[in-house]
Image (cartoon, rainbow, N blue to C red; front, side, top):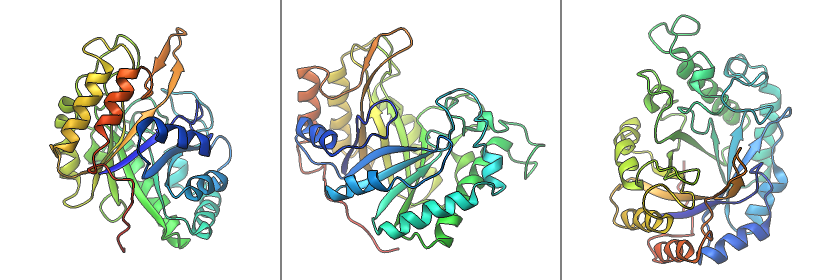
Length: 322
């Protein structure tokens, strides 16, 4: 199983620095296979060449989250990068240049578009792009929001292929739980199809604020794993984000992490091939510190470090011909 992480590239999630990668690896006691970071469009779509070069130069695999947003606002549609405008081809020229630059880099990398699309926080979610209505777009038998996302994702992949960017591995990323919990808002509804996806992944969090608790890693992944497996017969699966804040409402952070890594090592979910920890801290709107980092306490660090110490968690990527 690949040992991977987002190693705290601060609030914008894109301040990629070699020292931050080395620091996480020092804390974990193990190298990373891939390094996860965001590519925020923020008014311009441009390939993050320097960030990719930093990660690749360290011998790690860059994993880019394409974040189609023009501001940091969440819980609403983006005024610029709507799924409909992507489907209509309004950004084709910029996206083609992005993919050409990715191709010219010669670096093998992972790319995802539409992080946690079945949630309600990011502007590309189905909720903000037609939701469960069926009369505003495409097939009247399908919910407009998921159908728009599916077609936008396919358009990006088609553009990347037209540009000859064969060095990209495409990832489809859902949240462990759907918000809203509605019949139209499921991982299957958004899935672009096996012809467009190389990996399928999910986010699993124990809590994201002190005093919260979303459930054990096992309970949450048990619930969503059959849905992920049903999307494709043979695509590899990954936990693309996982973590828990200090001082959860139930149990301890160290115990939650230790149990998660124990279940992963036991191959409770046989098709899970990677686990990527979200290592970050920040201040919430009430100025409370939210600390998901693996060094939030000595016990937490020991739990993570011991959990990934075995050879089961590997730092060496294996690329298969396509």
